[in-house]
Length: 149
Image (tube, rainbow, N blue to C red):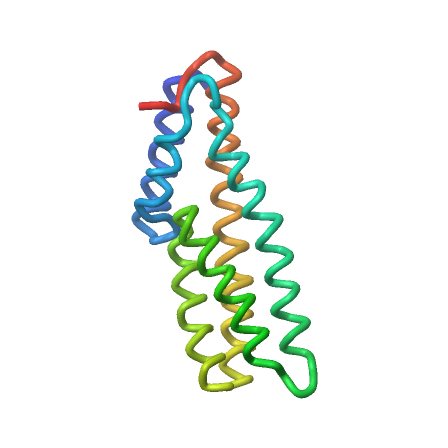
């Protein structure tokens, strides 16, 4: 495959991630901060987001396994995750967090557990899709092309 095909694949995959609601305009704003001097800026931001996500999801899981459940503690983790997902443009993750917070407010354990499962699923889909997108980006850059439009 050549650079032009990879660029087309990159553009198409990114467009589908917006269409399917994985990403929102905040992701576009992050991309605008990336330039030739920092071509891996977005990848670096998401590497930190992925690490934080794993920690926060594990913290939520542990907090929900406590007896009795401290819903304020669970909500604090969810609130933090909602903020970090919003800041990187991870729209579907952010939306699940909003619903999750409602279940925390209602102290609904079953709803919280369902939201945690949905959050893990959405996070996994987002990470997989972004890893594919970033893989294409790396191929383009390695071949001397650019993903900056």
